[in-house]
Length: 83
Image (cartoon, rainbow, N blue to C red; front, side):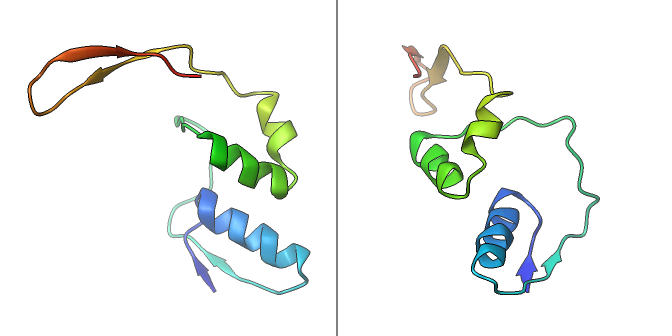
């Protein structure tokens, strides 16, 4: 039994399915593909590649070009480049 149909839950179910291990995913919300964004770091892309879905997801992914990091301790804004 996998509790939660988010990214981790579904990835776990897919990995188990490929090993021919039955699983049941329980999720209290309806599964939907709207109104959300996620950031996937390099190690996450490696995991998605291992699951065989990385190349498909890259077709619709938008790479972050830059951003701002705001330190909570001193309220100083610092530019941070992503990529």
